[in-house]
Length: 267
Image (cartoon, rainbow, N blue to C red):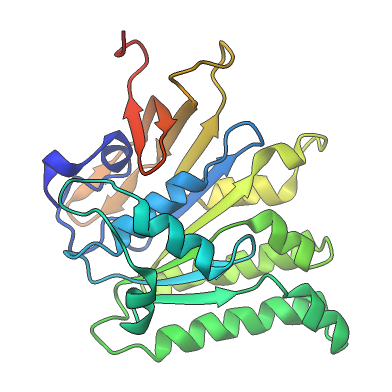
């Protein structure tokens, strides 16, 4: 991956190294946002990076919030570098690099067929596992599982946060078994009335990288839409270990791109 095409978010995530193996392999990434500052643009950028021409990644995308057409439209327009502009998800799907699970109606089939909410999530996990096992041998080591809205998964499970937690633990186990990465988006503010929300605390515990999209502490600004805080937890490997790193910077979401910059760097 060429360093001149990297932005501050890429660098905070450790994507400034070689693209093979995928720097996020075996890691869990949690994106947290709120009503004022949606973090969906982070998910879009990670889809785009994962499907770059220099990557061998296969994405299993579990969608609870939006249909395939929504993401295809956004990714076609999204520009994250001069050398990688459009991304056609239809082509990537046909090439078996983007596998899309439309779960927008997960709750309805469970109710109609008399299945429990837990059963629906168990079947979803089995479907993900079967998909990974069915990939060619050279692709099994380059899998990224993405989920676009954990809170809606909880809704689909009829409020069964324990079922959702079990499902996330099963998916977390896949990161060890297949060295795949797990990337999820959740809305932190919906748990604001709870003193110690178990689901969000457990997700933060499991995460190797925590990305928070938050409003500015000084309030709204015309040229700044919010701030990102990236906590990249330390890793241990045979060559040594690295400690926690915290990155904080501002961002502005444009029509076809996102601009990242340090506080005070713009006049």
